Image (cartoon, rainbow, N blue to C red; front, side):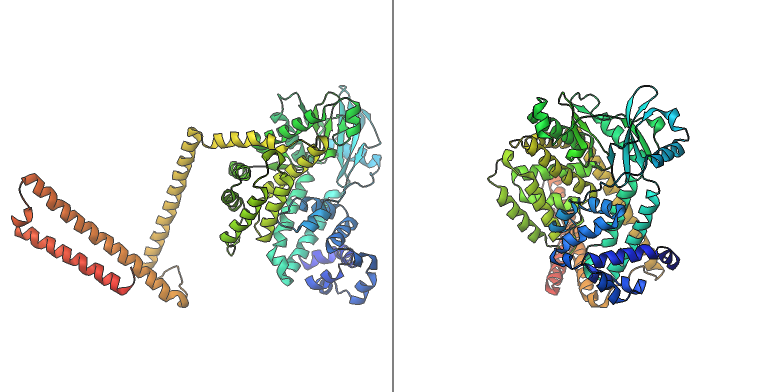
Length: 561
């Protein structure tokens, strides 16, 4: 961040520094060097400290700090709560408590923003527009309205100037992350700047309602023939980047168990419908609702499950979907090796991680669930154990996989309230087996082999180009490589071994050709050994054999075979 930009946002920097101090995190200011950037005297920071926070854990203090800092920090905290592979469990637990509910902004501002965004008078758009919002959050709020064509709709409106506020905070946070990495080893180990960048991208996407609208449509296509699941319809003519109009669907939140019972709704059927719909999205489409908490899942009077709020979705590539399927099947089979292989394939494993230690952790995990029937397997515990392993060895898993895991944890929590005896693993098993059958389908295997051959061909071309570059540099006495003096001896020995083995192979091949020629010649003539009839061949054979023995003895004696 430039000095000019830093001066421009100096007041926001001071707010952040003061709130660090009030929340009992004042030491962070000095550790990352923020006090030097702002030229803040220590006495000011210490005077601001609130003693009541000193009795709280660091995770609690961080959550309080985030809540006090407002929209951007709260949304980033909520996104970060999905990354149990990167952050410690106590911090994840606190981040999950973050609530984005805030007081609504005036209806006059909402009307003005709608008219500006859609370039039309609000009375020309809606027959009825209710000024009292039905819901309010940190980024926007929802109003009920009716179109002139009679449709009952929900109008989602973004808060005025929210994007400018968020982008400013994200820029400041990235600068703070860079300061932390420059001054703190743990920040470098956790790659804090990369985390901020990743979370920022997710938050910026939430600020564009057209992205959310496309999410709604895509998941809607997955369930277009499913009568038990309903997805709202988007009205594109009245939607934009900061306004989204969709069907208004009034149902019962899935966690209001008493009301569901009063309506005579079969809760076990709702649990089954919800679980199957999520697994269908995951395994069949690889595109799924990323936050199915009770506020985003309603139930209609006939038991139909309704999904709402598609700001967070997960996407699985075919590779990630296959790896997740392998992980799921390995968990079912209690196969620790399979679990480790799936983790390694999915995540970025640091070079210094011992695979042996990783296998040992997986075996401990396997033993923990070895005698547990599939229907009784607590998926939440298994996923948390998996994230514990990833966190311990600093294995960075793909963001979409962590969203997937978070989705399944939320799903299990919701369905266990609906029906304590319901197991999402029972629903997941046939999907996992279907994925396995699909993977070993002869047609898919053939396509996989074709892809492997193409990849091998590409790698061979790259190797050929590298060899050409090397040989060209050799001719011009300008090699594009450097060899460390410390390793030159070892490199030389290794090169000797390669050349000696190559020489041995060539001589062995030549000797074999000579011997085969003698045997074939003898067979053709139908006589005894051809060597006794043609002395010159005998001499050549003996000479070749002698060279072979001598070369073999020389190589073995040198100790570089």
